Amino acid sequence: MIVPEGMKVVLDPKDEYTHEPEAVRNYNESMYFNAMDQETGVGLWIRIGNRVNEGHAEMTCCIYLPGNRVGFMFRRVEITHNREMAAGGMRFDVVEPLKRHDVRYDGDLLLMARPEDMLDPRQAFADNPKVPCRIELHFEGASPVHGGEIVNADGSRWKLDPEKSTLRGHTEQHMAVSGRVTVNGEEYALNGHGYRDKSWGPRHWDNFYWYKWQPLTFGPDFGIMMTLRGRADGEPVMYGHVFRDGVLEHLTDVRIETRYGDGYYPQTITTRLITASREYLLEGEMETVIPLRHRRQQADGSTSHARITEALMRYSCEGRSCYGMSENFDMIEDGVPLSTRLDVAQLTDRIPA
Image 1 (cartoon, helix red, strand yellow):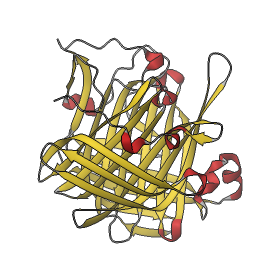
Image 2 (cartoon, rainbow, N blue to C red):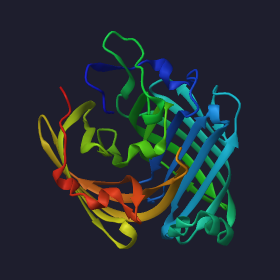
Image 3 (cartoon, rainbow, N blue to C red):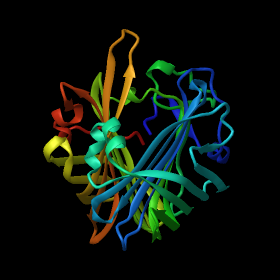
């Protein structure tokens, strides 16, 4: 996470649970998990975002299936409190703070042979069948938890502008995962690794401007997380880490080069990651991609347009390989994702010691 100068991050096990919502309309509390089976290539990511002051939760489920098929579902579910992470047949339970979580989903999915159909969600839901889905997964921490809540140097609460905010607190962790996924009667064992994150505080999605996020876990001893985030008022900033043999080592520099195909979808991603002790070369090749969109009406009556590109990638680094995610969020201007206009391979920032 990006920490403003003069502030610090505090990690509290209580932050694994839901918080008392702040008195702002755009308060968001969300949890995200991804999981990859390295034998079958079946992967998924799921998310619940409670926006209780707006009266709803956002529930998203996305499963990457053999044959480049994708099962997907998004719902806005009415909620009246922020006491749990449960919506639309999906539920996240903290078994042991900072260590173990259970994830369940019992509902339906839109089953797509052409994931790019989601460029037009209304048409996608009309043209593709809905099928039953059941997810039962257990997540156990492979790495220490990284992050926490941003506070002032004296520990007091940070006074932020909710209209310009994306979060107050954020935690992330490399995970081991076990369980099963059943889609339309086809059952898949899912035993591998993944990643999770949690955030809370005021959020407008379009305040992100653009970002590139690569969370992946090769195994219980090796994982990578890299975020490169654009800003409307300056150069992008970078943060992340390499998890190696039980230790999280912060990135000090990064270079990323993306080769795009039609529609500005990432085909290959080459990322050079530098820590205080060594350099890593991470190479990724896209397996399956699904584009999602976000729209928000602004105070002046205009509508902002953003695209979130969720790509299942096959990564290699240090002689090892794994499936993992690449998530690109972009505001769209004149039909073009903002980050593709910039030579981001030359834009980095340093993480303070």
